[in-house]
Length: 306
Length: 283
Image (tube, rainbow over all chains, first blue to last red; front, top):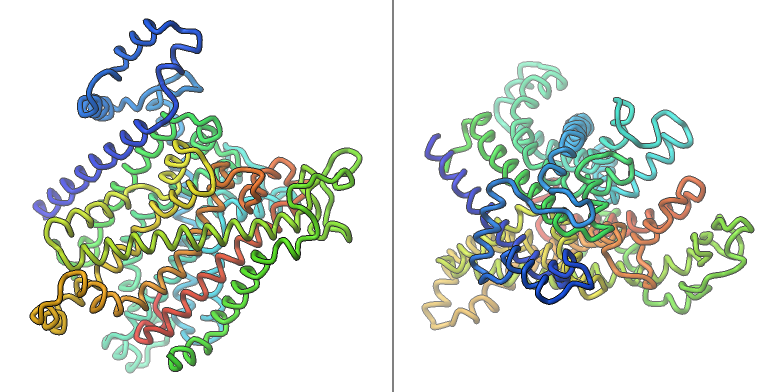
């Protein structure tokens, strides 16, 4: 187990290193000259040269990268152009609302996906199964901003069941979490269905049925426990999938998290924030994958450690 | 082939999806003929006296947008943008992914490992954020959007092609071909690629759905194709502040994105079942 852990963590660190190379490369490719942005239009060449030296832009590329990496390791993500503050603390202060939203979205997608998948599997091949699977396709084909705006219009504006966006209470959380979680619910229902169908093929299920157990009990007592294991391991991957969605969802619902910060940075082309959020999101994804890899063998001893 | 078609035809949703795609393609190609107005023309009578957009009516079938432009004409030209990016960007992604997956799967060794580590690295980035970061740095525009989406979307197909190539490469007929003196290029193109065609077709179709959604998100974020080119995501972005008073400005282009993405997903799923019956019923 320890050797496996060490191997997985080393691999993750290498991927993180790769991420830093990519973000450095992208930052370096920016056509806008950071020196001109800091010095202003009317600066003298001497002042520009001084700033260039201060920023280390006169150094060779590999050295610049090593310095960049050194700053990243210390948690220094650079300075925002538009907000005149450090990107690291800015992202950290926006993290709690986003994590809350992601957690609620995970709850929402599991509450939608798992029952739907079990139901479809138990009705395999019949109309209910076909309807459920078609709906799951609809949910993964819906752009999240359209879904968010539609829910907002129906449940907040027309019916006034929920507030028109904002942050602070449980009722603020429902619609954004649903928007973020619905597509995931569609995926989970498909995975749950196929996992359940797979499990229901086993001999011990046939035995349970043969001894006269009701189909409901067969599914809940024998099927669910085994079928849900691969599903649980997938939760770690959701965080990564959600990082794209929060940009759109937080903007639609005025949720003051990282997504909204990113949205505003995109509108004002605030590159340090865009890169900072991308790096933080990549860390989340790598961590999520690591957790998924570590959980799978723990909950299912049949999965061997490699 | 006929057997495949018989199986595909049995999946009514996939056939419906095919019809939807055909209808969208037709309206995109024939947009200049069908569209009642120029998509960029701002009509004085397209706004109310207070300057609000018009709801759907006899003159403007799908209403007008916040600039008094005809929503129906913009929708038709928007289909050109969506389909063009969906097909070209995804085609590029399939080309890159297939080539890299094939080479990595057959050559293995350092080159194969390097390619697969590159896919690991790409998977660490959220596709939308990476696309935004690239689009933010490069000047936004049609070609850049296509390039950015292709560079983000090749990963999945590369991994699928890699896995299949690895298992195909161990078959005896490949060894026989090599013993007969066939070069690497010939084995890849003549002996491996043909067997991968069904997989590639399925993932290419599903990939168009992903691409259509990604493009709509990019243009909703203002980082997709730039005005005056109409794009469905941008139409929603532009009318967001007017949304509660003029919900059709969001619902109509939103429905267009949903229907097109759904059609490609249904066709892709139908193709998967028809091309590989052993996978039937799996997710």
